[in-house]
Image (spheres, rainbow, N blue to C red):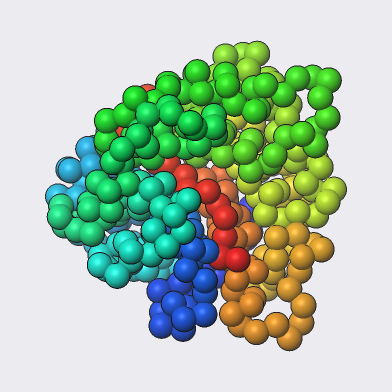
Length: 340
């Protein structure tokens, strides 16, 4: 686990700057690059929280206004985390970034909410993220109107992180109407979408930083589906989905080092990781061919490698102290869509 994590974190630390370099801005499509930067901000937050690093952005229980008023903290001593922090802070301070959030209209308001919510500590109170957030939450975004259960849950999560008022349902009700909860014992496993299932679990459990708040029957149901989906993803050699499912097992109180499916998943990932620490594709059948350009390799490797880095920094965090925590005004997860 430690080797797997170190390799993935090292690759992300060495390559994340490309997302905001002139070459990256020129060669990566806008919307995938925006998604990738939101993912990086999520990784930064969870990585710093899990390790207790200097410069951490663990603002649980701290209002958005108080966060932005904080002084910039020292750069983390871990050079890979410091590289991630530098890229995130540079992007969130740039007035050139908010207009990119609205290039794709169907994602615009959600991206603006996420961008405001994931702002690192130490930014000016009137920085560009505040205007983007205000624009994103205007209208009916923070009401239940015309939202799927998954989008409803995701939006509530970001609203809490951004410390903005909302009219959204509470977490127990959002779980009850989720696809995961609705999946009956007789239904084919293929009717479940892995990303929908895992992100539902991530939101409920704050990526393993709090108890998911499920009763015994619901917890058993969720664990069963996640373990079965893990077995299927391992069988298919799906690196990206396997990384998410390993983290979902942890979020549900399982130990992926000891569950048969979790142990198989970690073996799969350890065997697939390149010497540089990357996962060159989303799956064994999607592996980047030899001779691929550096840009193509980055675009294919970023998603899976970031997922493994995110999962393993949390899995390596001691679980003590997470049980029974009040769901904080805290982390929310952007959809892990990748720089495709």
